[in-house]
Length: 303
Image 1 (spheres, rainbow, N blue to C red):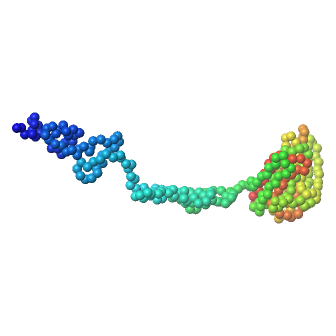
Image 2 (image 1 turned 120 degrees about the vertical axis):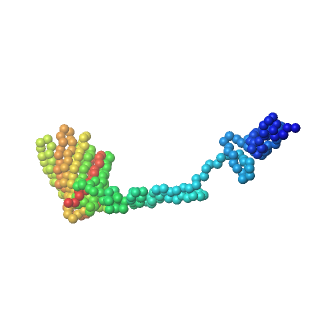
Image 3 (image 1 turned 90 degrees about the horizontal axis):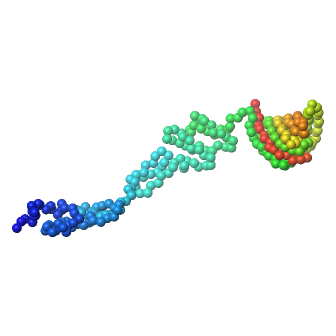
């Protein structure tokens, strides 16, 4: 009888070296195969083989797991991190903000620090001696600085309070408006939101229209005239307000024009309040009509 391992003149491999899906076919030759190979059968699309132990042929099909991050390292501007378990990272720049208006400028390479908000009216200024290279400072101003405005809309008066301060001794007023012809524009000074209507105002007027000139004067009034009414095309007043904070009597020198028919009248007023009194606000008004427009006030920087 022929050697069973040499049937047909070739040698059967050892069962432990044979990997096949057809173990029964090989048993026809009288040679058993390692039946544990059956565990390599099956599986579904996308699965992978995984060892279940160190024992030979200990495999199973598993769905691949998402790989674990082995470490989270905090970079510039980030804090936290870790190498195991749940980790938290924090935007260090975001946590530097504590107050509305804060800035976080650079202090050097990959470094920063909080710069608290400045006070009202300050501006951001470069300063190489500051830790952040910038600082909040009072605005660098020219000779004239805007301080406020009031608005009329078909109204007989408009007020502007808390506009005169010790910061400026003198102010400029510009008023572009429309009103009925002949409606005088008047000014009343105010203190703490209250009109001062003491009969201490005066007005001196020089005017010219169509080649003619004239003048008028009034005193012991409860308000002072600073301009005339403008008809269809409106009027314009430019005035200088002197010393409303009262180291001297407050005065107003105003210039303007009003359109009446075909002629434009030019007015020059010298008005004021005949007492040394401190004022912080102003009211513009008309007694005979309504006004529409905006007046703006600018502080003149002290010399």
